Image (cartoon, rainbow, N blue to C red):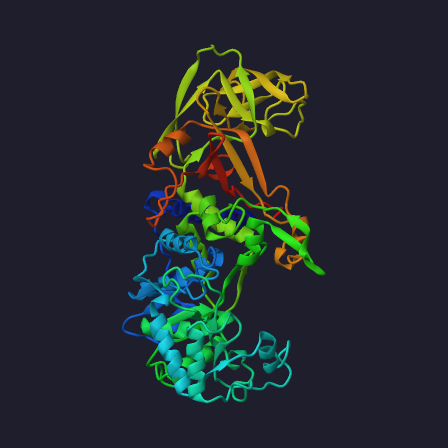
Length: 632
């Protein structure tokens, strides 16, 4: 029994020691330098995905003196979030190894190409912070491509075919590709005859679909299981549509399978990086380069090397150009028995390709997603050869993490109720100095006026008190963020519809009570009238791609609350001060950054100032919520 006090004392000493060690660790952690928004470069270019994993192995597979890559978009639509990964991979890979990257427009289909797409793609690449070594076009090489097509015929590796689309499908084993495969009747036509027919195609003697040049590849072993070797088309006759760069010079245009690898060779591309849907194309890619003696068989010493990575997809979104076009332009459903008869007309669901509810890059940019945040998101995901399918909440969490470190705080009231503090003089005004970031009290600050009349959010007031409701109610005191006093509601007024319009209140000294909640507010005299738009998913379904798009059934799944617009919202005057610091409000399309004004609306969400106004008012777009929405 005599030893018990010593034992207790020993345990107490160990407990005290652990407590001190824990306190020391906590202090050491607190003393570490924290990320500073001001030190975060606006053109940050994450490189961790190049230092390890798939991309590092690709480089080690072919370590060249100069890495040369290309980003080769088709100018037939607006880029989407998946292209952000492609841009980051191709430009980033070259930059990481001190190489160069081309922006090459694959402009081989004038029927679907528009100047607006060319312009948008150039702007998006610049917005993401990349500068191409050179901007090129597949059409730059049309003459050379045509010469190589004739050379391919001379080597008995191509022929002119007049089969219909249905006949070609039968040759490839039918609709399911499981039947017997066989060559068409034109496959063994004489070389000179194919050259003559190919020139007839060039000279406009055939209409679209009447003739096409096919590569003579392999319908048998060893590549019989690869449809990319089943005599792919190399050239086709197109409808009489003027090309943006070559005018009416050409009546025929090369296909992607013929053009891509050859243009890679012309530009001395070392690493042709593309997504895994082109994995089977690697065989035909190498085949064409080899039969034209551009690349040595079974070797990467000469010619470009194609490798494939998994594309990026965000679940719950629509990325198909054709389907987004339906959302933008509307959709007419035709009678299957009478194609001239329309049985259903679906109006446009969004304002345009840059509607913030879409996941095109022009839409994400307008919504206020910062380019460095998008690049960081891609980098954090890494690159493998597997499909990266990400939930929207994970994407938004990455953007939220970036914004939390980089944007100022302001007070925004979405659905305002007027509060009159009756015991303040009519001409009362006090100007408060409030830091933009409460975690940096000595950092940048703004002036926040407060007068006799202020606005609070309708959600922060109840007509009848509730013990579990800690904000404003009759007879209850609440704190005002950053204000030097509290307020107590004494009464309220309603309009003829029973809606509360005015709250009467009195000033309460801060030392008189300790409120259970603090709410945000906007000064009635100096606040700015704005329209604030909050965004939710465009569809109710988590898998909108599985909806009935052909018959228009997708329209029944639209989320009625995909956009919630607060047309009477009010924001503190400091927003105007922030906007005035920008020489020209809106995006600077010629630079790698933009001039969007972003801020955290305290207790609400992150917002940016839109490019356009509504009824003369500034429009605010919600970027992301302050925290994850569990409903998503």
